[in-house]
Image (cartoon, rainbow, N blue to C red; front, side):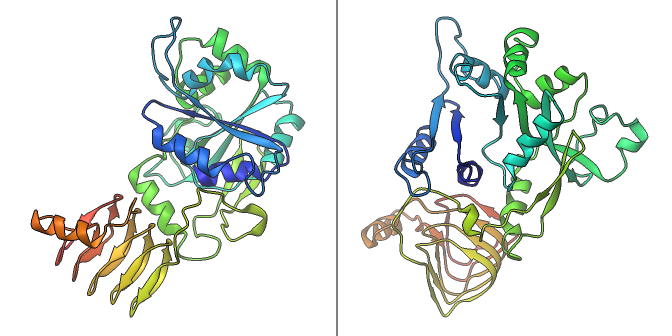
Length: 337
């Protein structure tokens, strides 16, 4: 979410609404801490506000999908004096020139523009009609998949959601295909895609998964998620953690989050989350380790030991390869994954 929102903040005028589903307390708390109106870089030129799912006498359902979420808040969005809406998903990893994206939308006098990228056959869903391909050509590389990022003219958005497709719930599979009599969709929100995207940032300054974004208006933009650029800072919640401490550790091609303690181990091609504790003799390869939400005290560790449990982190002499490990994981000694 931080990467997606930070990309928008770098533009002078931004008004960002984050639509969240129910049980979103932790996300709401993070957004309120990370994107306060007095944050450096903001300069009060815009805002980031959370719009939570809700029920009303007129609508007893929670958000049923991406399009339904926008529809339920249309009464607020239509009051803004804007020409178009930029719709994007919160869990994507990319950098895009949004000013150019919107400029193309206006220059081509389009109603809707879809951002798309080239995709391997394994992750692509064959749906030939949005680009007008025949079935044979559609099954040949390169495959083009929607990123779930759209620019939609304001009047078109209101018409589609309120009038033409008032009973539909999803942009990618219903609204966009229905609006154009065409269809293209692809789900990139998988664990494998999450794993590969994170490990992709370990290899080079500009990750190896740099791609080309194709717009349905046949314009091409660069897709370069470079996170070491002072013009494109990534904002997040301040946690006041110390730098990670590495004691006699062999670390290559890895990204280490702050607040960790890494002792006498061997790590290669690894993304280490906040507050991670890795013990002696551990060997880790091709792995993503999510953060720990808190530090355990010595008293906590003694108490867990008496109950036969293990501390948060990775225990001694464990060997982990090609794994995606959830936050606050407890992995004991001599474990092989």
